[in-house]
Amino acid sequence: MKGYVYAGGPVIVRKNIIGGFVCAGGVLAVYEKAKTLLEKLKVELELIESVVAKKNKELSNRYELLVDLLATARKNLSQIASTIKILTEQVSKEHGEAVDDFFIEIMKEIERDLGTLKQWEDINRVQEKVNEVLLYLNSGPASNAYISASNCHHAKLESAGAVKIGGKGCYHTEILAGGNVSVMGYPGIFRGGQIVARGDVEIKELGCPAETITGVQVVPHKKISAEKVYPNSILRVGSQIMRIQKLTRFVDFSNGDG
Image (cartoon, rainbow, N blue to C red; front, side, top):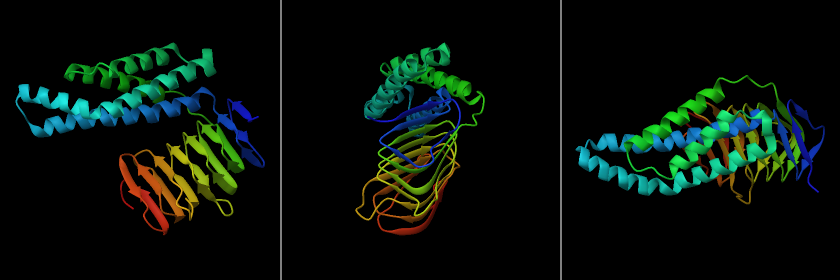
């Protein structure tokens, strides 16, 4: 049976988290996941808008170009819509009355609108709703929640604030953090999992010699640092991506610069 910890504040695990789920910060941790998802959607819509603008076509041709671009982006937009639906259902089920009705309703509207994008007005309407909900989420109270543990194996961690792993490290673990992530114990390994953080990420050893896919993603203007990175590690800072092809030491990746 997997362990399950759900807390409104900090969670401190003195030893290991094995095959469990730990949430620190309650609904605020889920809101951090929503921010990351909505910012990804915002980038997708802005990309479509910028490509059409650069073409500088006549109005009729711009419409045809928009149709082509929407067709090309349909897969990504559909995946985002599906993730929004799952997230909204999860929030309603697990957090109940702790969640503002405004958040639930506007997320449902965005999900429905993504399935009917056909013209400029549709894109503008979704962009307005995305900006509205991001403003709502970013204006909320800051959380003092964090997760602290020694080792994690096949676990899932969600924190409205920071995550600190002070022992051997994490293996096949998913981490979602509204703040910084530190895996700087001994030997400080993060292997075969994924980190999505809104703060900086600092790791001693990322990936593994067997080249298991391992991912780290932070928002723009934040930094990913690692003392040793193995091949098949994928680092993302905003829309910038660094794919590690060979054993690399002392990586600092921020704002697209490695």
